[in-house]
Image (tube, rainbow, N blue to C red; front, side):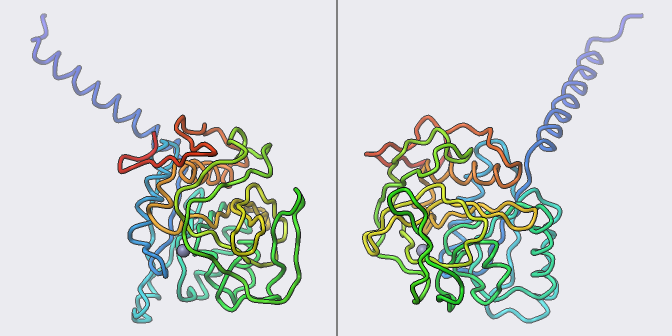
Length: 301
Ligand code: ZN
C-alpha cells in the first residue's frame, strides 16, 4: 500500500526535528556550566554581567546562569532565601563586591572550591570580604576592604622574578583609566600559551598594590603601573584545596571587558579552572602590541 506523500513528509519533518533537538541537547550537555554571582558592586554590575555572559557563551564552550544576590537594603528574609547551588556548576565566576554573604552561603562556597570546584575572580570581586580569611586565600590578592600588611604581602614581578613585599601599608590602589600593555610572564601556561608577549588591553583601571596571602599562586601576566612603577599581576592562578582559581584584576567597565584579549582571557581562565587545561584557541583578531581590539556589540569573532 502506498503511503500518502504528505504523511511521509510529516514523518520526515518530525524525525528531523527530533534529530536536531537531540543534537542540541547533546551540545548543551557537553557545555561547561558557569554560575555568575552578582547583585552588589561599586561598579556597574548590571552592565558588566551581560558582557561576562557574552564573553563565555560566544565561544560556544559554556552555558551560563546568573545568581543575583539581594541588594544593599534588602530585608534579612531576602538573604534567607538566597542560596546559590554552587555544586551544580562546573565553575563559579564572581562579579560581586558588597555585603558579607550569610554563614550558610559562605560555608557552601568554601566547601565547593576546596572540594575541587573552579572559581573565577574578576576586578572588584577582589575588593570583597577583606575580613573573610578563606576568601582571601582563594583569591590570592585583594584590595581595599581594610586590607593591610596583616593580610599578606604586596606581590609584583621584577626582572622576571615574583617579589613578595612585606612592606606595611594598605592594599589596593589605581590611577586614572587608560589602555595598557599586558605582559605575559609565563608563556607556557595553558591560559597564556600563544598570546603575544605584549598586547594592548582596552581602556581599564590598572589595579596596583594588591596584597593577600598569595599562597599556591602563579603569576601569568602583568602590566606596568604608572603609579607604583611595578609590574602588577593581571592574570594569576591559585590552588585552594582541590580547587583551581583564576583571577584577573582587569575588567572595570563594559568597555574594558569588550576587549578581545579580555574575552579570550576569561574563556581560557574559566576552562583552565574547570579542567586544568585549555582547548580554546585565541581569536584571530587578538590585540597586538600596538593596537587594541574590541568585540563590539556582537561578541567575539
Ligand atoms: Zn574598577
